[in-house]
Length: 225
Ligand SMILES: *Cc1c(COP(=O)(O)O)cnc(C)c1O
Image (cartoon, rainbow, N blue to C red; front, side, top):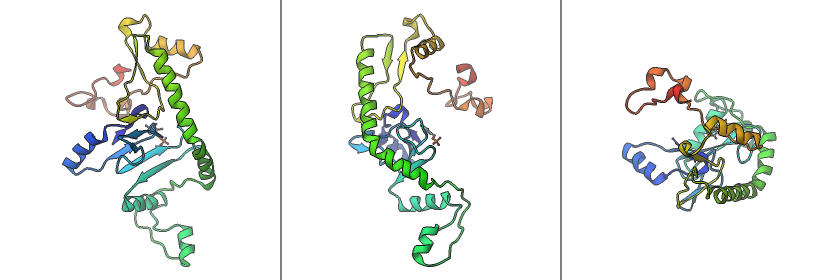
């Protein structure tokens, strides 16, 4: 599972080299990377399964919900069944077939987007290219503005990608600054800038502390907050 963190697509050639060696499928959490691309291929086509969130903070919204893209017909059918209580056909398909038969083939959930939400999503989709371009233009303004400040380094953008800019990340060299992270956060918020810490580590406190230590584990834990 790869996350296109901040909006920059991962290096999928490198990820697929590992996946093929071990017979693994690749999932792209593309929630940050609407409008991005990798080696001229658009986000949404980079992995076997690609997921987008339509939560209100994202590039476009349906209130809640999301979109999954895949080239696999079998995967698409399995997801349609899963979102519909594990039932093989929906009402529309049954009325098109003129029959009543359906089967519950697995355990599923009601993960259906409503038609009201879909209508909002379709109208948002029309505005999406303009919004993505605006995010990229704002990011370039930040690039120019921050270029003269040695203590603040924007996250580097690799040459082979197009960045979706859900977030604009900067690394602050605290050795060169008189403020710590909390003070920088407060000062920028006081200026009306919607800065945040993306993200608090997910393993604390959801995983037991015994899993935080040892080779390959996550030693920072709560103390890292
Ligand atoms: C928003 C987001 C999610 C969660 O999306 P939901 O719609 O709440 O399920 C997952 N991953 C990333 C990277 C996100 O930005």
